[in-house]
Length: 135
Image 1: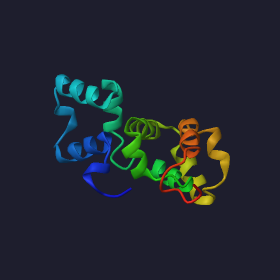
Image 2: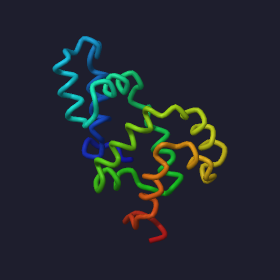
Image 3: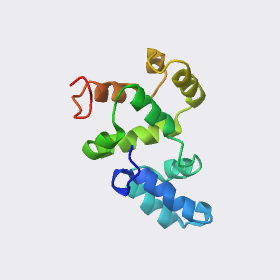
């Protein structure tokens, strides 16, 4: 994905903001509530996401690249879907397996059996995206 402010998701903006703060734990409950509402997630999820870090959804971008999906185009056309993909990837318990599978053979379909984003990624993969070579 291009590194422009326009292509960044609200989660990426949150992590940039969080990095600039001295301690997320010092935020008031009202502040956390407001941020969670803006992101469309619960307070608990927001606190969990905050503990994961800004690169916690990088595996998603690698998986999308393996599927020849352009993250920038998806951010522009389906921002809510992309935000949800990031959230689910960040909270996934299969990160090590995913990283290993991507490193070994990114085209192997084994990931579809354990990835909580598999259904959404397969649906996106079936779309005629403008930047795709085969369309």
